Length: 420
Ligand code: NIG
Ligand code: FE
Image (cartoon, rainbow, N blue to C red; front, side):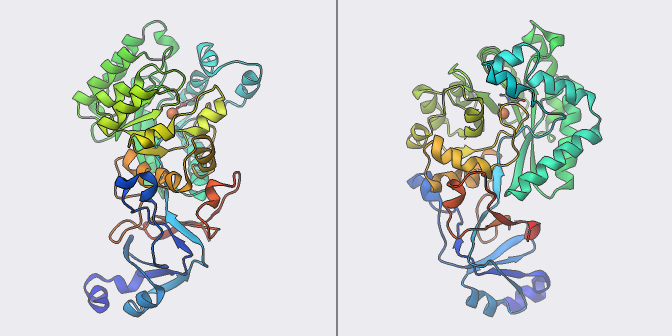
């Protein structure tokens, strides 16, 4: 078998074995028994990798006997997991909003800052004024940090231009970053992120102008999103906008119930959205609707904690109802200034009361489902060799100790792209 693989498919040359794995967390357990059951430690200590995929999972002695030409690297008894999938970020922008820290300290809320022309609109001004090179350089730096902290797949939203042409420009920049790699990049069009001053008092007119480019998004944007929140875009406005996108064959994600329970989760479910994101204020009715529709809940505990405006998503009720729960960073310059999903894992465990097993499944396998890349976020024979070696032998550590980067090395498609 080994000889045949080498001769017929040339795998002898670049096949390699990662041996000496302490805990190999594959995330391929049966989630029908609950999200935590999706977490599984394999009874194996080695992976055979060739052509960007995992070719075998087993014991080192067996794999080296079967593939004698393969190079062997030693994981030193460490934890190995799939690469993290960050299913919700706004990492493409210019500038920063450090001045908001002082405003929040004197009691200004997120929506008050936005209402006064700051917040998202401040980043819109900075991004409109920046040339492509500046935006790309700033975003590359964020993606490098994401990679160094374990993120191998990242969803990036547009949303900091708020003109039809400008939003398409941001989408092109996301494509350029996807082209450059090494991370796998998912592109979401969030032209409806806030109401720009040019359309003050006319949200419907603005949404119509943005929707005019929906046809151009087919094949270019993986998803269309909108910030549905009282005071930003109301439920009915979001419904009309999203129905238009859906009718044009686009897949949906929705920012809902971040700061109020305005029925956003039920809207996402009714429209068959792939995900409903935030959900900090979603009540029992919204959770039932998500469960029935099979919509993935993308929870962002870093955002709720950072804004510190009260509610945390009711993850326990969602999990009990059978809603698949992803955890994402929401990396953005206002409500969650980070590009690291792994740094959010302790907050998911502590603030959302998720078990380490549930958190791991949320940042890998369910995250992959949330971005429509079901093959990612698991370590399976035949699947992509995207994985992280963590500097610990205990999978609970990254859910426990905050502010520490446990990442030792990161691999995408079998190639080391960060660490040593
Ligand atoms: O998901 N809520 C809307 N959008 C982002 C924040 C964007 C920003 O403040 O720049 C979020 O929290
Ligand atoms: Fe967001």
